[in-house]
Image (tube, rainbow, N blue to C red; front, side, top):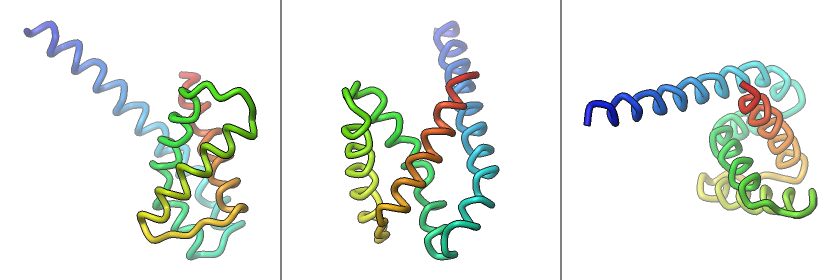
Amino acid sequence: MGAWSRIAGFFKGLFVKAGDFIKKLWTVAEPFLKEVLSASTAAAVKSLQDLAIEAVKQVAIQGLPTDDAKRKAFADYMTKAAMQKGIELGDYELNLLRETAYAIWKKSNEQ
């Protein structure tokens, strides 16, 4: 049982480090987002950042054949998640959120 605990602890540590890295990358992207979005939209996007990374992961594992299918799957996921938080996202915000989340997710997987 001790070995399993150590193995579980190792993987938990990896996920914590990956999560910390993703949060740092969002922090780097935040000034850019504030510059191109209104204050209220930037705040909404910030509140959705974890969901955006999750959406990118979900789209990636689906193995969708085309970029259009991937964009639609991301938009569907994020639109539903945003609505549950009382946030309405337009096409521009969805595209910006998708591109930013994808870049961060891709960078975090290079480690």
